[in-house]
Image (cartoon, rainbow, N blue to C red; front, side):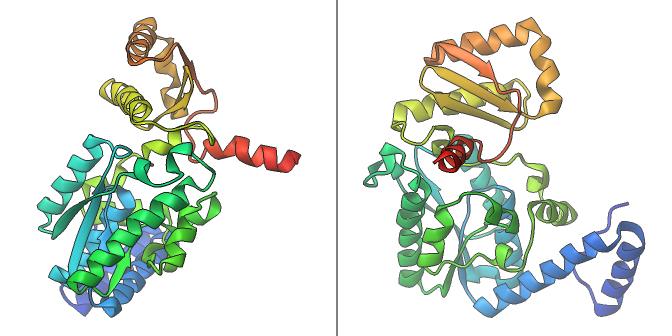
Length: 303
């Protein structure tokens, strides 16, 4: 059964739909729906916003709701850089065009930010400081009252120094503020008909390197092309972690079985070798967010 609740016609119809949802999907969905209403109210009170828009699950949902609520008083802004794959950029452009959302592209080369290429533990802080300072200036120049970004409630549970920069700059995080989780955002996105509802999670390519390993444009290209190889082969959720001469592949556990096929292994190994890796390894724990933080926190605990 498909229930479209996002386009409200009148109060009576909405009440009927809500009653149906209560009986069929239970309280969890209603909690997500009430958060959606809180999000709409929050955005409406902001009057005009610049949305940091990467084309991922969260920012796509946020910019679509914002546009539905505020219309042309919304500007989606996407940053192009060597840490942002071309495939992700194209999908962001297509999404904005599909829904007639005003869209702007800015250039933000993180490798030129002092200290970023050294890949310190606060790398994300340096990146967000530079990027959102540009967005704040753009908003001020063009008369938008707020800059908003798409981190969700789940993002509070991992090591994310970028959130500190966002807080210091006064950037609003409406999805987090109303308590929307990633699963709830996917659920609501599906009900809204957004094709991003089941899009694999993505993080900037800089997150593929252990802290302290210098990041270069060439290394970023290696990782990007390696991940594109896996995507082209049909793997959905992928990460290729760069450990010097070693590529550590993370995929969802349900896709482990594909590596039994020697043809698939040989193709991956051959392609990765062409890209400059000497060794290719499969992470037996599978894909998970923030895996590069595991060694960092283990060292802290040992100290």
